[in-house]
Image 1 (cartoon, rainbow, N blue to C red):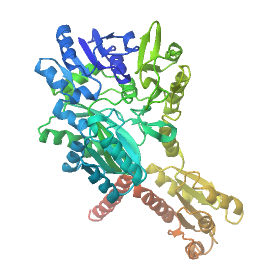
Image 2: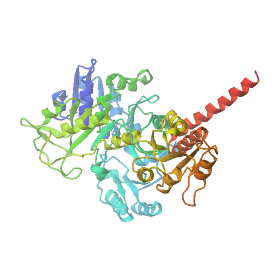
Image 3: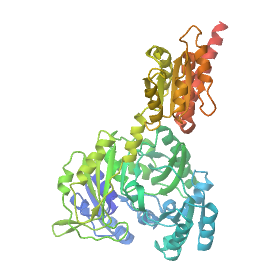
Image 4: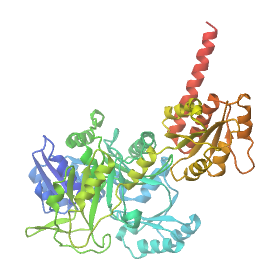
Length: 590
């Protein structure tokens, strides 16, 4: 096969790199390509926006498959034009690409098909836009309606900033005709994730989740860029959320586009905001993300040619993705000044050293050849991408390679992938602390631990006496929140002051379990635990093992308020209890 890849960025380098691995591919062309692509494919000096020249080249070379990287040619109808001339091309046609080409269309589409998204308004007059801003308040988000290379989105913290953003887009035409209309949205809080899938207009075949880093500076500060790095998978996208995104976003979108007379084939990229169990669509893109493409293709084991042909031919249901389980990270190195003005033509050193590091691929974006040197020619210059046994190893490898590369004024973020690390570290830390006054209480309190383990809630077991080790008990309570605990379960007998002491030194919920440790059969512990002064509450359970289990069940119910996966496990547990009762009733009648 002869393949033509259109574009000249890091995404296109990754696509060319992947196609070169296919036994079905003999020749790969890239228009216009870059210095990195030049080393593994034939670069053609045709810009990605010159559709007539691209068509003539594809016809002359008898290209078997054309793959479009950037969004501009797609929204200009390159797929329609190639297909009219009998050429196979991957991507949505002009009618489908409007999902990225017009934010106003997309917001109206999402509303019509009840796909979750932020409240919004669309405006072609500045006065009306500013009036709407005052009605929804700040912070808010102002978006240029059309394509703006990922930079036409401004988050305004004050009314003045929001009004300035409207003027910048609509009056000053900072993004050209893309700003003839603006979309103004409520500001959504949470964590962003990228959900990218192949589709043939019927079947949706998702890639692993990923997460982009849009802001130029560490800590997600500064203006938006095309993307300063990405990693896959994104821990924020749990299995449960992945299923919901498919059911609530991806499939309804493909079906809705078909119903609109805009059948959609190609890459469907949903930018999402995740807040607990809330999912909202921020945007749609109609192509591979950049830089998400780089870490995703590093994980993809399947032949990309087979997948793209399945999309074109409507046979995607016959394709199964094979994906490397190991995580990947891409760190973008940019020119100083990006996304504003920057200098080009600076010689890049260290590329060969970086490429020799195990598990690393250096994908070129804004590079060119000058004499015998590779120089920077764009804002985003390189995407240093690495794979590792875990996310930390992938991050370490990527930054090890980044440090080998240099040119005057090069810049990169230092925190790519750190959200994944933080989330994974938090997931391994105990969420529930189980505290008991003596090791003799372990057999009872183990019942609580067993239930927590059965539903996948992490916990820690600690012995700490309110009377024999009061300072230890106090310190445990005071540091519990900082150590990541969400709830404390305290079991004690006799005077049973443990739960009360802990509750007095923390604002976390404390659940008390009275234990039978005296001739009063636990009644003394029950009364000591339940009789707390106003303002220092302890949720008191029954005595002994039944109370310990209920303490664990209550703890999970509290955690499940913001965790749909835990809600599902509680529902399953309730169903199992009902089935056990039914089985006992059935046994009575036999």
